[in-house]
Image 1 (cartoon, one colour):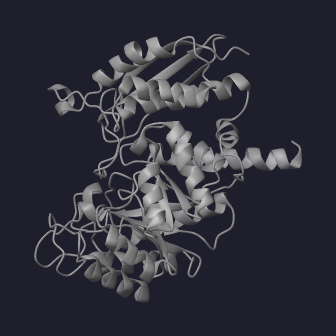
Image 2: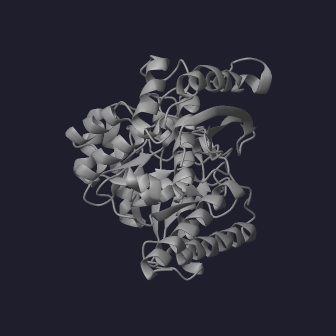
Image 3: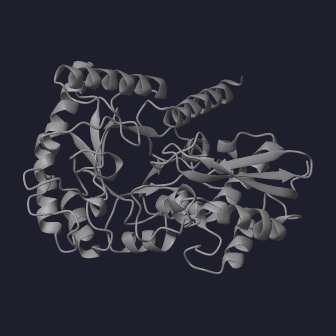
Length: 425
């Protein structure tokens, strides 16, 4: 087995929104290779690592030729001859080469693509599945099939409609087994589509595959989702999860908004009392089990209040607030701001830092939601990562669209592989 890096190449490809992203291939000495295609978010936190874009006329400035050059020249020159299995050394070389805290020199997209491609090449060389390789990096973690949070309706920055909340998700917590959870999500999706058609609503979809109709208000969206859950025969077995993405908060006009008195573009720091009171009202009416980014990413005092008031009732999930950053995560834990967090590798930009975040979560009983981005590729490394680190939940979008379904289908393959290994197959 030869795991020495021989060559690294990169290619500009398109993501699910038609925007450029980077696909990197790491070649090892024995001919084995590993690839990684990096996703991109539309709703991004202020504190995410920098996704390097060209800023020129090509693709409206969104080209990634600079990131590609960084991979093929600077990063490749530094890593050729190194052992791809030495994850920390590989990532540290790239950190030192970049020299910035937010990876703005080389680009988090460039660094992550190499970091994950090295992991996949190492797994291939070792003759093991990628999820088993990720598991080997997280001592003490159990293999776990995460419970999916399926996006069923899009709003906010992920759709051209008047819904304030960015993601309405269904979570089949009362359904056993991944295959049956996928079936439940698909059947509820079919039912919601039928309901929307009958009422003259649009069945067009948003960035993550959820429906994106115009609504009277967010409450109408909740009501239709509850009707679909019931109509599909899953009463009591399916909960609702929300990604409010409040930093992207939307108000279409004076008549359509989610939180009274909270307007789009307004500084939301200090608005926690009104916002948390609104959430408390929703919890009294709807079976909500999780609220993601319910407060502004800089409102540390507000997050603490929300955790105190709602933390025993729901998953209080940091995303833009924690940005898969070990330092921000630790501060959020120390100040008792969250009980769960979104894990998005491209928010931080390296596998080493992702594993550090996982370790912190495990040590502090913080639930992990492994997540895709709104601009996705057909790469499924996030599925292997979710299972390998023992994430409690995952969100890969709706049970439609190839780039979303690929990730759920990969989880089905992993589930079968785990069952076969238990049964001695």
